Length: 178
Image 1 (cartoon, helix red, strand yellow):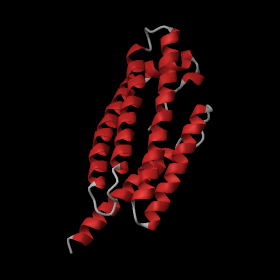
Image 2 (spheres, one colour; image 1 turned 45 degrees about the horizontal axis):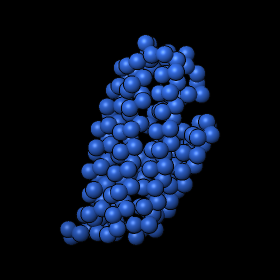
Image 3 (cartoon, one colour; image 1 turned 30 degrees about the vertical axis):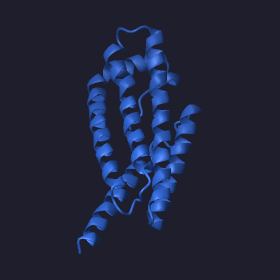
């Protein structure tokens, strides 16, 4: 969830960025892909917990987050490989694809957070997930408008939500075994 240059940054800047940082970009994308797989396992576990509820929306929307996270890796990986040799149109198209997959990711996060809001029965967790849904949806809209607002806040809010869910799972399992 690190920002990379998008279409609005211009072809020369995008090209230079990806040429100069290709190793870091590939490493970050591999870490992100690994995290997407871990998230899928995590939401599967959430869906099977008693305190989340029976509707499959947490799992379905969580799988959508994992899937869009995979999609967000494709344009940067391609750009890191072809930035030096591709034509301006290709670089511009891949930068735009990177922007659009980020929008899709934040929409998916907003939907997942909304599903958690409806599914859980804990007031504070509902509040956290509702705030994350709002921030993520707003981030998606702002990305479409070309704004960098909430660039740090929305991804960090999602991480906080995942940590809160993990903590709640740990607490629920601890109280269920007593």
